[in-house]
Length: 111
Length: 117
Image (cartoon, rainbow over all chains, first blue to last red; front, top):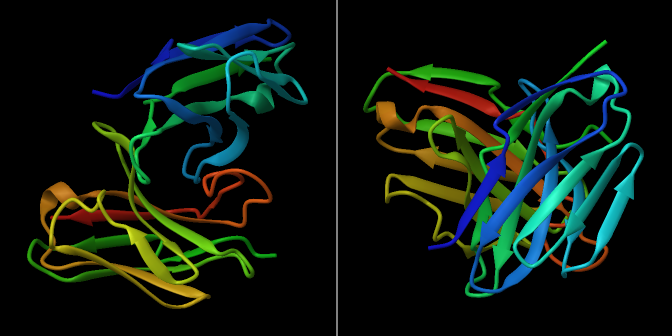
């Protein structure tokens, strides 16, 4: 069965303290892996799409990387405004609607 | 652009009642998605439309759920009859992917928090 697991569930960082969030997956062929940011009471905000192992994408303090089994979201020198829940989702090759979301990592950046 | 608009933002109803959630996608977007988010199951894709046509509704949990998109600027998700286990936040999203998959560059609405008593 296809699965997406995110770790850790929650992460507290001091402002400026870099770290990484993990998204590991087991799917029957990966079509794409997506990262989103979700603030409390709001809908997810699209960040990145990664298609193949070795691919990297960057946006401000965020950098997403992909291997054959997992993806990392690296946060460099985070600021309090980076506090949010970060979700990953994977699309497999077996069907048109097989988009699986992880349960997210809740990031808190302390000033 | 105002973004994806959903209404109502909050809905409280009693078991057995019909519930209709509404969505206005971003103008020009050709894909529209309905999602459900709960603490237990996380975010789940229910159904998506392309150019107003339902493409895949395999995520719709039961026949009590139905979705329509009568035109490019409006979609509804209906639950009839509603049950307490339907309580969740329902999100609508739209996209006009410039490349790759329809799930690229999705814009989500603020969601409708549904509580079924």
